[in-house]
Structure formats: C-alpha cells, structure tokens
Image: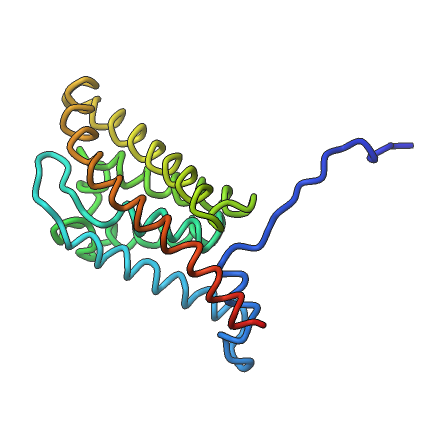
Length: 205
C-alpha cells in the first residue's frame, strides 16, 4: 500500500491571464482554446513591435523586448508564455521581420544575439513558473521575479555571445550597457503588475 500523505502538494496559483479568461472579459461564445490562441497572437505581435524600438548598440541593440518578454511570462504563465515566445521565434526563423531592426531568419536566430533570443524563451517560462507560485501580485515579488528573469536572459545571452567574442567582452558589451535601462523596465513592471491585478479583481467583484 502506497502512503502518499507525506508527499508535498504542488500548488499552482492562477496567473493574470487565468483571471482574465475566467472572468467577464471573454465573450461566452469564444472557446478557451480560441481565447488562448488570441493571447499568443497578441503577445507575439507585441514582442515584434517592441523589437523595433531600439538604440543601435553593437553587437546587442537595446530594445523594449525584455520588458515585454518578462511581462508576458508573468501574465500568461509558464506554458502559455513559453508558447507565445516560441511562436515569436518561429515567426522570425521562417522569414518574418520580427527581430530587432527588422532582422529575420535562421542566421539571426543563431547569430551573435541568438543567446538573448533563446534567453527570452527561458525567461518567459521562468517568469511564468514564478507567477504560478504567486509572485507578481505585489511590488516586492514583481521586483524579485523581474531580477530573476533578467538574470536568465543575461546568462544565456552573454554565454552565447562569449562563444563569439569571449565571455569578459560579452559581459562588457552585452550586459553592462543594459543595466540602467533594465532597472527602468523593472520599475515599470513593478508598478504595472499589482495595478493590473487590482483592476482585474475589482472588475470581477
């Protein structure tokens, strides 16, 4: 006889997208699958748009993508957030000009900035996991989650870039120039997420 009473219970809390899809925001005639597909399309379009607002530093341009990626992960959860970023990467790989500066193709995906692009996927999933543990509902937990998400992107991006130019130089050109901008994005996210939760909850009351 198997005794499972001492096994830890895995808790998965609803993320913001769950609250929206399960509330009054989605028409009753729209299926859950269609609603999620719509969120994937909107999220990938936002990522593509955010990639076009950039400061052209070399070799890694400054864009608004990190903020959008981390917010998608925190809002959508691990699975839906991961699917959304994967859809964005697929769009770029097949030739749509969705990467920074209108770039596209396999060469860009596996070029010097490829680590950051794949880091977006890993960070979105990580942020989704954190959100499913209840983070992102307060300013403090949002800041902690954003720091973790940024760290994932930096580690993957700089390690990948380091294979081209050396790790120390990769940190110097692929991490340090972005720290101030990412602090600003962190502040924006820390303000947005708790407010979004309050708005959704008030609409459901």
